[in-house]
Amino acid sequence: MSTFTIFLALIVVVAFLLIVVIMVQNPKGGGLSSSFGGGGTQQLGGVKKTTDFLDKSTWTLATVLLVLILLSNVTINRSTGSAESKAYEAEEAIEQPLPTPAAPATNNDATIDSVQ
Image 1 (cartoon, rainbow, N blue to C red):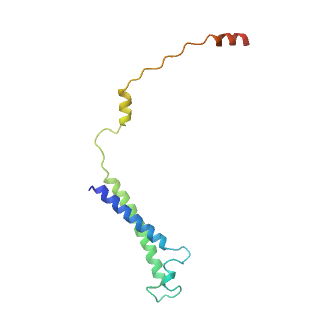
Image 2: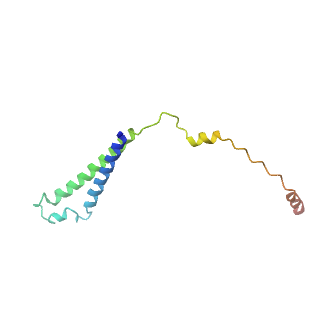
């Protein structure tokens, strides 16, 4: 298992967690924090603390996701060969004959003279 594959798996897990944390939040205050008693601040850490936790976890997961993506770029296997396309090399190897130009039509000359 390569390092890039490990980073890729971590990116998928963190992205999934970030989606879950964002979906739990409600922009109007009716998400997970309202299910703990509405306006009561004494229950299970209170509404304010739940909102703070969700907000901090969103920022933390987003930062971790960005760092993992940047670090995974460093671990990508880069070939030491030339950077040119293989299709370009194959195109050079096959030499195709150029099409021959068609003989000029003599009718065109007659119509031009008759118009003038």
